[in-house]
Length: 503
Image (tube, rainbow, N blue to C red):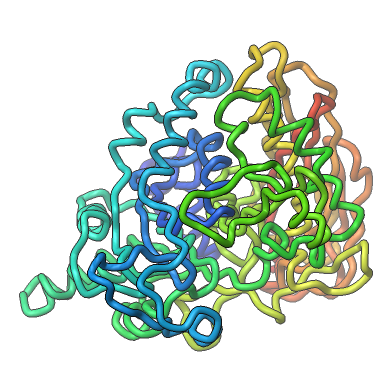
């Protein structure tokens, strides 16, 4: 057995060779996260799904915020014009805008309360309904981008960013960044003139990780970016569209059945308990209070826009928490690895910022083109099947529902090898429901620095092999995925990733 000193030296060496290893060691821990939301209809649907996955991460805050699309107003009749060009043109001066209120999260948590006793039969770690209600806070909601005053929500975020727990806090931005910006501004105001400012600045910059879906107000660009440049940002501006309103234009026809009314009626909306009965779909006859533009539930309006009854409206913000679900793809180690929450690359101008865009594409086998949305779209079938299984957990016994397989590598997860060497790819899996398992080894071609072809032999077996290409250069990387599906209904998928580096 290695001594503690020897093991420490090995670990330090490995973290130098593979910078993501430190995060890998923590990936088994549940990630701390705070959700900020403006309450748009797709946010509410994202929140519904989030509750079914709330055992997968440590939710430490649920905060109402505003955006360019939704704000409460100050109650004094003050007129406001958006800083964002498209909404300024669309709405002009407003006293308030499409505000859904500050009680809808609590109502959904009460529906969660009714299914909670069944959920905990299927998995450990679901937070209690009382705990979730206790972390609901009201942030900066008066106007888009409002960050001039401390609020219950901003103070709550501030307290968590300053606590003694050094683990990352993933700040999910489903609306605007203004409440998070106010929390950061308050920290700056309290400490910038004090001797401990440098240490506080480093602490917060190292702890906070923002996952933003678009810029829905100007507070990131105007305040956070210039004042907190070392704070880590995951910015999703393209890939989320496959789960958002224009999904029919983004998702290949072959994958669209997973977003159609027949699928949602059978797997989600009906006979799956009170929480999912309130999941919003096209033509379902519902009307969201406070938002006159929520006409999706009107069947005539839905048909006019090309949607059928119970078709998916959207969950444009769900990739922010998909990113935190540990399915074995290890995307938390490095945003460029890709996974259920999309794939991003490091900004050339800000090393703390990871972003998608037209240069971050995966090959779409349905269109035979490189596609800026496909790093997210490629997972739609497995993500939706996983959602359907969670829906079953709301109402079915353990023996009558499906649960994901457990997958592990027997090969090293990091491997440095010389050109021409034949290596064994070995893994194993078990299934809690004793389902038959299907193995598939594949290379994530868009990830890794080696760009030529690689052949995997016996790719449908737990043990496969491959020959390291003769032209691989020292430091070149190849990412190999072990994908395991079970035969249950719905079929569930989990993974392991092996990273090969030339030496």
